[in-house]
Length: 117
Image (spheres, rainbow, N blue to C red):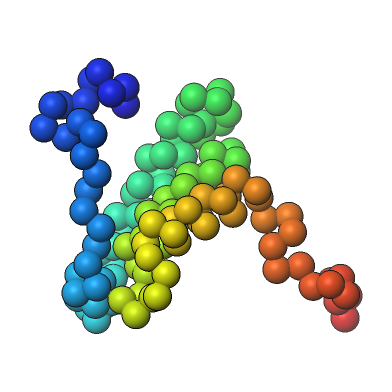
């Protein structure tokens, strides 16, 4: 959304970072974890539909869905991070965005190459 169309009460403000107490509350509750997964799935579907529309791809194309899932996962890494994580949430988000920007081509590739067994 264009900054000029953002209501004054939220312009320039970021949502608060989830606290360790909030993370524990969600992680300790099967009901809240399930609801959180449903919310993220709705975000993925909505964003994928928007990306497909914006790029002129069919609604069931894989690219918008993968892009949406990757972008939504950035929110997940922030919200679902363990309360005991030593790394600040902002750093986890930056690392997640860096990985998405670079792509997964060289991530977790065995130096020996894939096993064909």
